[in-house]
Length: 125
Image 1: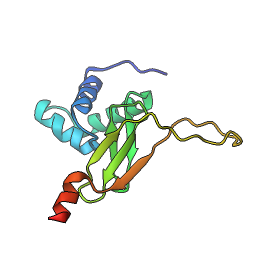
Image 2 (image 1 turned 90 degrees about the vertical axis):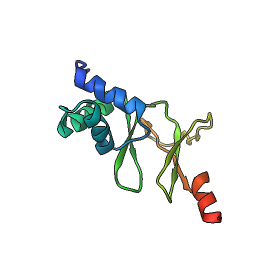
Image 3 (image 1 turned 135 degrees about the horizontal axis):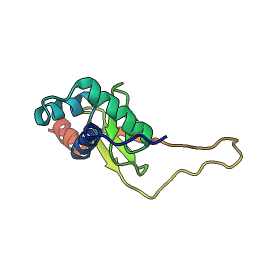
Image 4 (image 1 turned 90 degrees about the horizontal axis):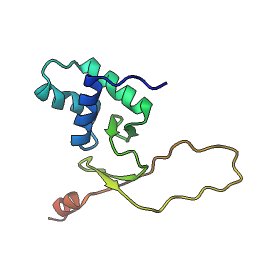
């Protein structure tokens, strides 16, 4: 069931489009500066609705904090284990699953972990 769009939901969505893999708290802090009257619960609730509608994607990483992504094309991510930076990886390579399994894939999430260029340079200096 598609919910009717609200002004607050669109404000949350637009903020997410400007931010880079933010947490719900980061979206709230960003909006608090632009929309002083917006509440934390409103932001969190609208992120949940946007994810349920498929307009955004929830990302789960080892830091145990949910991040959000407005890019929903099924791309991969690289996560720096030192600074926690999340980098989008756009590639046409898709893993092939054997066809003899009796399940239907609804979504996939593949993440790569290591050190980003900046952290490598810091560690080498």
